[in-house]
Amino acid sequence: MSENDESGEDEMSFMDHLETLRWVILRSVIAIIGVGMVAFAFSGFMFDTILFGPKNGDFLTYRLLCALVHKYDLTEALCITELPFEIISTAMTGQFITHMMVSFKAGLVIAFPYILFEIWGFVKPALHNSEKKYSSGFIIIGTLLFFTGVMFGYFIIVPLSVNFLGNYQVSDQIANTFTIGSYISIVTTIPLASGLIFELPIIVYFLSKVGIVTPTVMRKYRKHSIVVTLVLSAIITPPDIVSQILVALPLVVLYEISIYISKIVIKNRDAKE
Image 1 (spheres, rainbow, N blue to C red):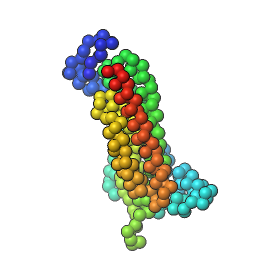
Image 2 (image 1 turned 90 degrees about the horizontal axis):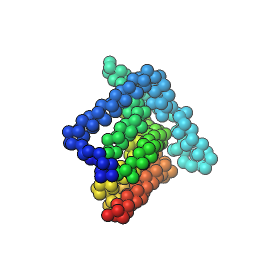
Image 3 (image 1 turned 120 degrees about the horizontal axis):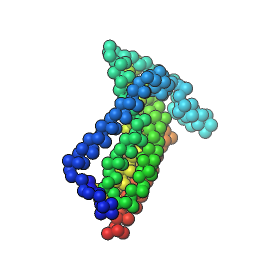
C-alpha cells in the first residue's frame, strides 16, 4: 500500500506494510484483552442480565411480541412466556472457561470502534486525499452498523432461536437440558455474527473500489440471497410468516443498500476514468 501522488509521501516497502499491520493487530488485541478484563469483573451483569436474559419469559422481546399478539390478534406462537429447559455445567472448568470466552467476546464487541479506527489507519495511506476526508464517517457508520447488527441479533434472532431450540423435542421422553457452553455459544455467536454481517455495505464499498464486486453481479445473485435469507429465517423462527419477516426483512434491505453503494462507487470510478 503506497501513498498516492496527491500526498507526495514516500512509498512504503512490503516489509514496512507488514510491520504496520503487525502493530495494528497488536494494538487491537491489547484493546480487546483490556476491555475483556473489565468485562470479566462484571460477571453478574454479563451472565444474569445479558446472557441469561433471552432464557427468561419476561425478556423484552417476548413481552413486546406478546403485546403485538394481543393487540393485533396474531398467532399465539409468537407469545413466548416460558422456556422449559435447564442449563448445567458438566465440566470442572466449564464455568471458568465460559467466563473467559464471554469476556473475550465482550471485549471484541465493545472495542470494535477502536478496531475500526486501527483498520482505517492502515488502509488510509492507499486512498486519495479527497477520500481521506471521509475517515470519520467510515468509523461512525461502521460502528453504527456493527452495533445495530449486534442489537438485531440479540433482541430478534437470539430470542427466536433460543425459543425454537429450547422447546424443540422429537419425543416427550427427552428433557431439554443444555450445557452452559452450548447455550452461551448460541447467545454470543449470533449477535457477533449479525454485527459483522451488518458491515456488508462497507465491505461492498471497498470490494467495489477494487473492482471485485459490481452492482450487476449483486443483482444477478439477488434472488439467491433472498432465498437463503428466507430459509435461514424459517429455520430459526416459529412457524409463522410474521417472525420470518422480522428476521429476513432487515437483511434483504441491507443487501439492496449494498447494491446501491456498489452502483455509486462504480459510477464514480468510471467518471474519473
